[in-house]
Image (cartoon, rainbow, N blue to C red):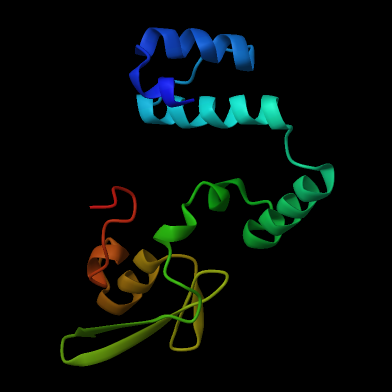
Length: 140
């Protein structure tokens, strides 16, 4: 596995074809290295126990309810449930609470921060920018 770091990318792709029996994805080199390292360990020591796989699937289902859009959002990019986001707009303080299903503002549920920002301002905003959070898609 240590050799993966110095293996040329074309050889990594060839190893991917051998170990996964499919074409390598168009992701960066670091991704290929980490997935190949995991696959080598999996083949050497065995994969996860079926009971563990079922448990992980159940936890994932609880987290995103089977919603494929939600499952693509990185969990570490969302504020923790219960977090209060505070923004002053035109002299009025607005408090938004992060919920399991989205956000709550003035006792009403919203699916996105952008929808909350639009309700507050009457214009379209990127909600993450409006509340002073990082751009959650780029991690900037």
